Length: 186
Ligand SMILES: Cc1cc2nc3c(=O)[nH]c(=O)nc-3n(C[C@H](O)[C@H](O)[C@H](O)COP(=O)(O)OP(=O)(O)OC[C@H]3O[C@@H](n4cnc5c(N)ncnc54)[C@H](O)[C@@H]3O)c2cc1C
Image (cartoon, rainbow, N blue to C red; front, side, top):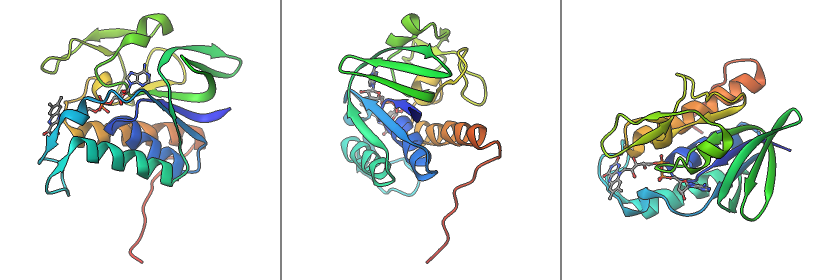
């Protein structure tokens, strides 16, 4: 049983994964390598003068793995309740987790099968997003969403920040206490 399963390893998912794994949570990230960010040239990400989308995505994945997240190549088909956790079904395997963060970018393919509520998107060219509250919670207990699929502004700094925000909310709920992750100058 994983503590947190994350679907999607773009800026939102990998950022969530790095926070989750660094907090000591047993974390799995399922991704099918279709990030829209891989088409981007980025000059507006705070702290980074300029970078290619592919480099940003690869670095994000490496950071998550560095802290212990397991990165698995799979396409998730649905999510369902399973005992006191959640079952994530992929084309290649099944994974059990206490919490799931959906960070699938433009794709809401799993929403209907999983029973996740959607709504019209408000951002340019984003037709449908998952219906989440301010913390990132969906209508299904234990299932959260972050990034483009959660309706935030479609920019790498914002989707990455939203992934971090939602992971911090999940970690805080699991710990029963607000979580902060601050490293200090060595
Ligand atoms: C051409 C282009 C240029 C851009 N330029 C900029 C820019 O200059 N500056 C900027 O800030 N933003 C830019 N963006 C926007 C930026 O890419 C997005 O805002 C943001 O990075 C999206 O992050 P995300 O994690 O929400 O989604 P994504 O990066 O799309 O990641 C979603 C991930 O989920 C995975 N996934 C989806 N469904 C499943 C499933 N069922 N199972 C498993 N995995 C799944 C995908 O494979 C993907 O890896 C650009 C976008 C494009 C297309």
